[in-house]
Length: 461
Ligand code: 5AD
Ligand code: SF4
Image (tube, rainbow, N blue to C red; front, side, top):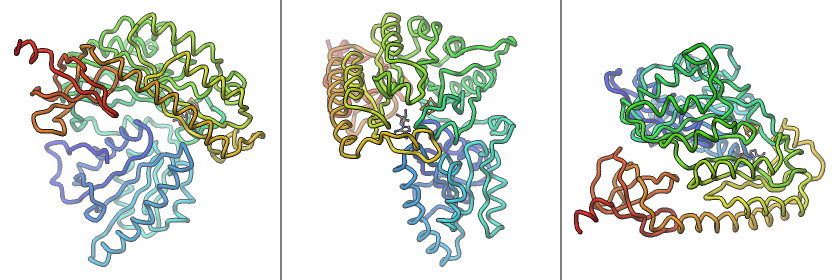
């Protein structure tokens, strides 16, 4: 559930909205926007399906498992909808996101109790679709890629998101990696104009955001119209965002190695508020597999980018995505991935077994890797990545770092926050949400770091 609290001054909440979100940060952001769009219609967030007058499943299609989970959730919702109907209560069920885009017809065939199927480009039509669905018997399907900019139609006012805010600056992908559905489900690359992004960022900062994470499927491919009539690249946008009062931290995700231009690498050394942390998927360390994946770069480009980033910002941590068992991947290719991981040293990573997505080029490639082989490669890779993540966390112990306070800790008298490297941190003491507090990192626990506030120590000394 990612719906933020409703904004003040809206219509009185009379209905409940449940949004379940799968997949990437882009979907988390979209869920927030859908909640914003529906708030003026009187929809207030709930976590309970039984209570919800409208349920939106904001779905992810990137791997097969994610799509199947949507169908099992829909099975459960059918029962809830029936039980509510028996009590005379209507339930509108909507499927949004990339499964909706890719499998709209299949959803209405397999789950006819779904009322609305909407693709990621049509969220601004949600109020109209809800109204139509409440009246009509058959499902409403909206999964076209309309020419108009969906961002233009979203409400200006953003509900406060807390100290960490997401801001979508780019959508879609023109890269067509062999294995990936995103170019088909999210459409062509589109960059929002700089002025709109800067205005939204100022509003987020005014609402209390201290950290802004820029989102895009190919965020570093962003090339937007600038207020001076030129086209800016991401580094320039980051420099402008860094000037906004109150914005203490900037991040961007997800990036492609091919779009790490010189200015962006330099920006990591020049913008203090740009956090020393970059998620830069490489997928494989083998040039043969990278070519089969249509990634458009070799392993060497990744090494050079990593070296230059660390030259610009020595404390920069890298994280990545990996796929093992892409069609044609041999044991030697997999070894090359292991060697890349050893050489780079990642602070964290996501790794997946290749799964064929219908309609993508890799789905019809020869050289399928047996499931058992994929399993064993994944285990080998994940053991190394886990060890590197533990090493990274342990190496942080003893350092004094700025922690952005995001809330209270699990135990009384504790605060929780996040480090510059996105690690969850907790410490004893009091500090307001949104404060950036220097802390000494004391111990690396399995999923977080414990810390001491520097000023409390000095006060006690
Ligand atoms: N099979 C396995 N993993 C995939 N990813 C994308 N498509 C597939 C697929 N067909 C992974 C990639 C990508 C991440 C978001 O999901 O590693 O970077
Ligand atoms: Fe998919 Fe490749 Fe585009 Fe990333 S760059 S969204 S993996 S096609």
